[in-house]
Amino acid sequence: MWSMPARLTNGDAVEPIMELVARHDIKYVRLIVIDALGGPRAMLVPEYNIRDALTHGVAFDGSSVPGYAEINRSDLNLHPDPATFLVPMWETPGIALMFCYVSNPDGTPFAGDPRGRLKVTVDELEKEGYGFNTGPELEYFYVTNQGGVVAPFGKGGYFDLPPLDPTEDVKLETLMVLEAAGFMLDRVHHEAATGQQEINFRYSDALKTADNVILYKLAVKTIAEKHETMATFMPKPF
Image (tube, rainbow, N blue to C red; front, side):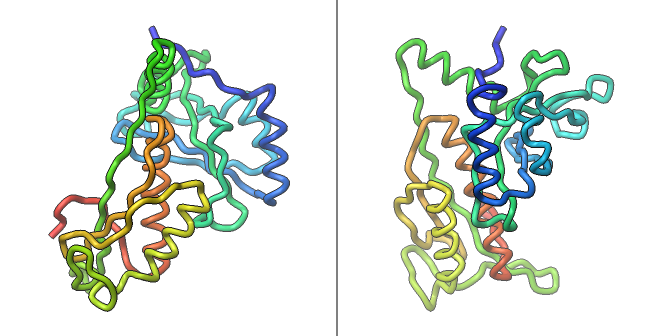
């Protein structure tokens, strides 16, 4: 039997989070849970409900999240992780976000919460004197969609630079918002396939890296749309 990860909620963490909300003039906080396929799902909570969300959690319909629960057992609660509070530059001004753990209505941990299971695994390893670091190498494609025809954006190949790789502006903005979110970046370059890009970031403990993968994909896709292109992490889309 596994137990819910320890959370600093109705004690030390509430007031510091509320101070951050006030300092950054936050109007809404996006509370993110991870579904069984590794995708983010979220709700917005207004700033005047953040204290209650941190203290008691927020109820939601688990049957509408892929892989979570059947309709007759759909009542679940999410619990924000204060350590993940972030005001991302790619979001609409006035919005912050936090990742969450998931529990059953009686407060016991929901067994289908991937983030909660990972946290427990990391904690168990640490009790045995081990660390668990992970470092992914994420690659993606910038593409265009004209009249329903999806094609690579640009004609670049491995290590190509402008003008063969016309994505300099979108990549530079992506790098800046990632660094502002605390990412330590490594190598950035055009990959071998046409339209394929690589932005590497520093490894960390498994939970932090898992959260960073979600943030990375949100940033890459959001900034791409701002520049009238699209980003896909689908392998070999063409």
